[in-house]
Image (cartoon, rainbow, N blue to C red):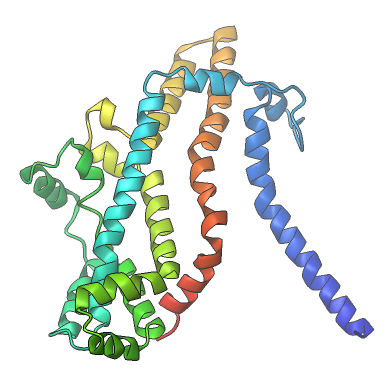
Amino acid sequence: MNSSEKVFNFFVYGVAIILILLIIYPLWFVIIASFSDPADVGSGQVWLLPNDWRLDGYVKLFEQSLFWRSYLNTVMYTVVGTLVALLVNIPAGYALSRKDLFGRKWVAIVFIIPMFVSGGLIPTYLTIKNVGLLDTFWVMVIPFAVSSYNIIVARTFFNNSIPAGLWEAAQIDGCGTIRYFISIVLPLSKAILAVIGLWTAVGIWNSWFNALIYLTNENLQPLQLILRRLLISNQLLQTQATGELASELRATADMMKYAAIVVSTAPIMMLYPLLQKYFNQGVMIGALKE
């Protein structure tokens, strides 16, 4: 390796390290801020580690009666919603990838149109109300399970990754369409299953607007909506208080804010390392090749 290549590699690695630090440090700061005194955070005294390790934010957050119930709701919505989405979108994508599907192009157009034209919030609300899903567990799972984008990505993946000869060989062995899809196609599609599953899980985990519109029962509301309500309540209390009480409420709100960010993002972020080996492959094959 000559000197010019060494300089180039040094520059590339240096830029990569800087970019990694720019991405990681904000996440790290939120974590250490959740264990720090809000006064230290506000004065800029917290950089790499807390000056005084404190758990007040987590204690205050965990003391909220609806916190654990909403956390369980979010876990259930994410698990069930992801399974339902995979059950709907993956077979639809595979069906569109089959060249023997009657009217395949027209069916694809039907899926593409909702990507650009939406029915609107009020018609959607009235539809959900009329079918009896309003203020139920399933309103967070069923109405928004179909994703045209995920179906198209899955279709492209099947077109480019599953050889047509497999279906012919399976037919010779007496394999039917459903058995072929379950026994042969799905085991070869771990990449796209992981990608679409991760996209769906992240979307459901972070969702709060649908719950705000379609859920009024507190026992059914997800974590993100409860955390939003807690933070807004603390801010309202700050505006009504004065003097030392206002300072205490502000400190409590800051501690709970950072603790809430850590608690609400940590579980879903833990999925990325487990699915990373499939993620790049699924995205590149399913979305870029044609």
